[in-house]
Length: 132
Image (cartoon, rainbow, N blue to C red; front, side, top):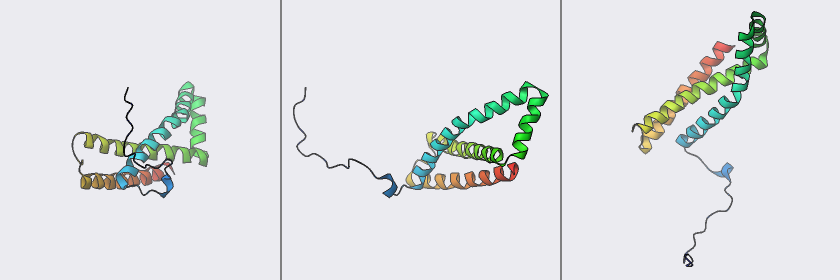
């Protein structure tokens, strides 16, 4: 048992105020990658319901088709899930490339984050055009 105390205790903040911190773009891309993963996980409830109902019978297929074509909220959910999937895919490929050794430098991380944001924005817009 080590009974020695640290002679120079570091003064660290007890409670961090995350709203006052400025995160760099690569960390925001990484955090949003995790958030879109959570959105996709929760969105599986809607997707599995639609899949199960549409395959149950021809009437079930028509019911899902009516919900998705006539309800603005359902279209918004579909657009959100497609956008989350597209962004999650782009950010995931970025992480895979970094795991392979590409873009590990500070400048490479920034450039990869910028590319991920631009590609994600294009996918979000294309998903919106496709759904609406």
